[in-house]
Image (cartoon, rainbow, N blue to C red; front, side, top):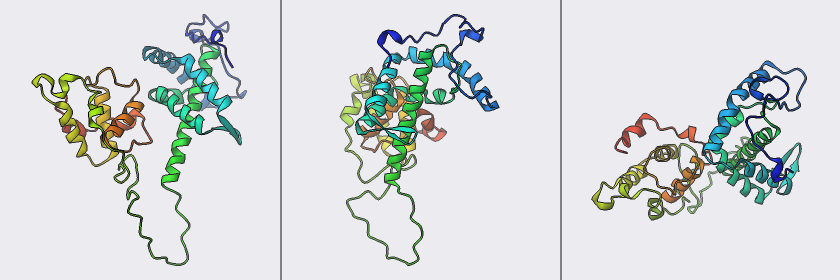
Length: 285
């Protein structure tokens, strides 16, 4: 466990003492003979890490906090399962909270190499923490999907009469392409409106964009389309300072307050608006 004074995420460690480019000097232990894929990953890492660290700093992500919070989960809220550590119920809550802070950076993080190079041991520790947070979050989501959509049983040798589904249960499953229609949360449009700047809510006799957005969004038939609207809003200028720092958190809020079950996959690249959505919402300022 690091102490506060031990963690220093400095991207300028000097020449590293080994003549490596850009001062990169920390190579985690790995196999003696790296594969071509490993070497390619090392080259990607040298390009990705500086820009990734800049993005984290520009977005005011507390990198020391990510490391320490991950270590807390790993040391106190996980159990050993084979060669992996699996979070407890409390650990899953913390992992979801941590994932919200790093979701927008997952693509870059997952392209970095296990074998370096990194500008410091602390940067490597941050990368490993983020990779493991993503792994545990993805495994949790996969487990939820398995509960919602259990594996198909082997075909029975006898034909059984179809069971009548209970009327209280939803008849559709939450997937990226089809939102739940049975057990969705109650909408709270008044609360959702609090995330929009006043001029876009019709204040002062101005055009009420908010109501138009809600009306058009409610006509959409799939969760992916609703997520595209969330993407448009997150990257536009209509939201006020209540806007979350990450798209992952915003899409959950947007779905919940619309009265829709949030999707399990909340990565922004999945919800880049297509031409149909851009045409429907072409009136957005």
